[in-house]
Image (cartoon, rainbow, N blue to C red):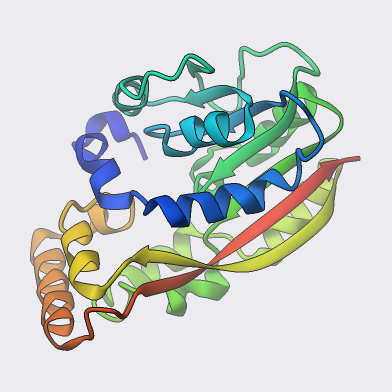
Length: 250
């Protein structure tokens, strides 16, 4: 998807942002791969609006190179103004980064967007130091029914089936390009503190699947979520299972 041809970047943070506690939880999980390094260098590949870029820099004392092909996304990211983060406009298939520079490549919900995954992994291999890591947050076809909006937007099922990869495909693709699977886990991730907040976030339509729906289908699904939110407990968080992979460069 070409985000520069949409209005998604403007409302992306409001539609996809985390609570401070949830972001800290993810950073804690990610940081296990660079534990012990005083000042790791991390490539946030497909950084979007930089919500992880600044958090990785602040929580890990890291130098972060944040890369994205979207000029609009990078404009939102640069507004966060962290001196430890360098933003570059580039596709994952062609990174203007010298060999063996980074300790970890981090990708969040972006792997399925790449046009040439093989070339992306070759670039990851090139820029990683010896035995470096790739940490990958990903949606997979196995988890489609666990995504909170799917029951309310049934038209998203075929879109997700066509768009997302299977866990097996992801693992095999990395293995074939010289990466060993270090670990995989399903991480319960809070999408919103309650259904009312979730409905509000969905209203920004900051999702590459939801933006493909017709206005009629989107409005109908959003109204169904709002009806559900009206009767759901206010202290009931909306939780989804997210696949998290860690691969080590072989």
